[in-house]
Image (cartoon, rainbow, N blue to C red; front, side):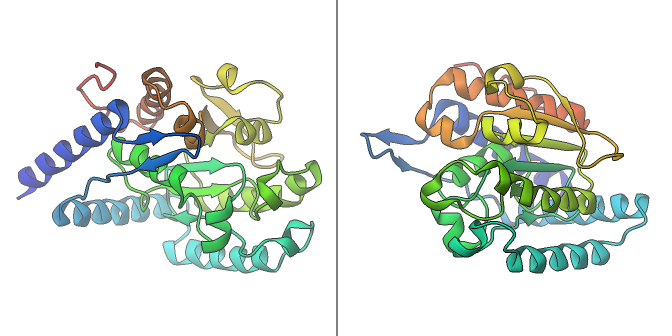
Length: 271
């Protein structure tokens, strides 16, 4: 049975990689109509993924002397605090605060800049077209959204999706720092230029930042966390070509290598 599950997972992973790099998105016209055809995993593979999450959670929480229950409780308390927050004008203009979701013991945290309209409506991060593409990337890494954690630097949607103001970024920064303190990821993936520049407090284009790890300090005196900047899924939707997908996949391979996780033996960049 274990061998059959491994085969199913391997097949699914290769399908996701091929799908991501060769493109099963149809982008048409100025309205950017995107068709998404997700791969549906076998139930056994899903069950094994959840078992792996539980094993990783137990091992990690044992090492940090924090139980999974404690971490969940702390994140719930933080969520309530974020939902009540009115430290900037975004707290009054948004529909829902978008705190984040995923494993409380995730080894990888994906961080975007701010929620969009779909996220504001649902209260969940990356649920629109960009979210579907992010899911595809995560699954190509042989992971699931349940095994990682996904959030944004800003917890409320700026009106009309405008760029967050400096004061708004500052008001939310301690919330992200607390999330990272609870989850204790080994790697952060900064999705897009805005998120990368905000986290690293630099003013460099994403093309100069991506492709290598940077040290991120959630707060003064904290241990550094490895941070890998990469292109935002929305950028890929606008520039859905082979080269852009190849660069993102190279960044994700570097993340897998950093965590000593299996990297596909098949070269997914081959046409």
